[in-house]
Length: 113
Length: 112
Image 1 (tube, rainbow over the protein chains, first blue to last red):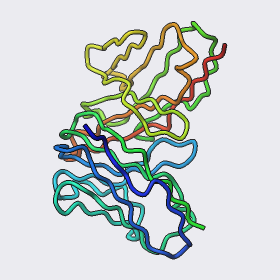
Image 2 (tube, rainbow over the protein chains, first blue to last red; image 1 turned 120 degrees about the horizontal axis):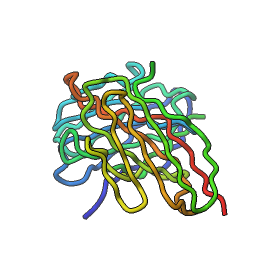
Image 3 (cartoon, rainbow over the protein chains, first blue to last red; image 1 turned 120 degrees about the vertical axis):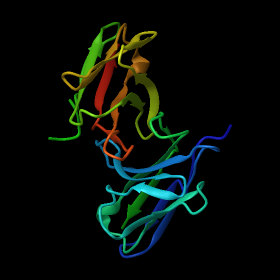
């Protein structure tokens, strides 16, 4: 079956612009997680969903970051007024249910110029 | 104190060597533990889950020490293909959340 799919794979944007990153989890996986990873660091937790609701958004760095999962499947991570410091690889992962291992997508490499 | 801590390395070892990594975690209520492997510019991939009794998968052995709040990964008979970053992951159960926290990763280079 299909794995976790993330689009786009690369995104270059100018400082101050708005971007949306999309994640399509494995079918039937109820939990969906967003991370970002900078070079030489481990993935940094941003937010996770259980079904349609954000169960824990404590990792979102500020109010420029927002994520939704309206139908409990596809999720979109939205970043407003992008800054150069937002440049990173944004990883999405899903799991069959909370507590089980995560399955990652290939990531979206975001570059803010 | 960081929630999950790992020695970033790098660990440079010859082929055939045995190497061990430790990872400490801060939340005593954590229930789920994993080791992931990440190759350069790729996504993390599950290597193994870590159970209370410890578990083994071929050349890889993972153990959990709840009293001291650490998990370990042992790799025997290292292969060149084992060169990667090994990420420790702890699920922050018990605080009304199930977020997974990653360590910074330990880099391993197996040398010919």
